Image (cartoon, one colour):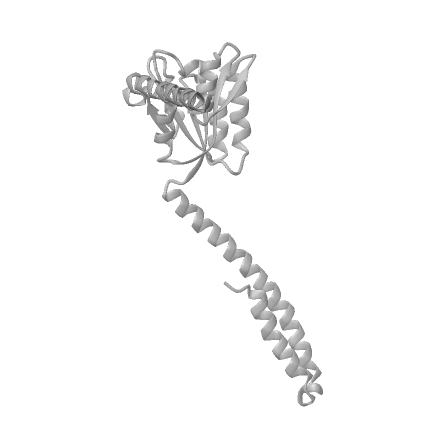
Length: 240
């Protein structure tokens, strides 16, 4: 799409050249009219171009949202949700949220007592672990409030049962952000469910398949064992 500035400029150059011909030279008002028209059309063209850009941007944004392409910040309350009784699979949470849009930020908040095994599992699943020496809820709420002012995020998803995040959620909704809350029973705050735009309750479909996980670990171990065996056989063949 050509810039209106270029079109207007070419048009006015032609007029100005015509005004330079000896035929029109004596008609000074004509030349003045051309110059006045140039500046008027240039300003009008600039205003129209800005309005067109703004309109195009709004149409694209609406179309993007209709397709479900929200930009999501996913915040997971580790001590509250990553418990043995819930047995949550983070990959399945990501899969469900992908129906709403793209997960731009994925954080798991953990306390200082989190095991190295848990931290490693969080990293392996593509999430950013945030270890807090103090109150995990406070750090998560502070981050959530900061995300409210992030123009690249339009949806904030909380994985928690805790009502402590109500003030941060209210602030997000005031700023036009969508809020998704993913929780589990027992202890899933009713107030939290009522304030959210979308509520997802965790059931069996979100749980880790322990049998599948153990099989995966076993296969990994066997592959390592086979590689070690092949290496030893190669070394033995190379010996004189």
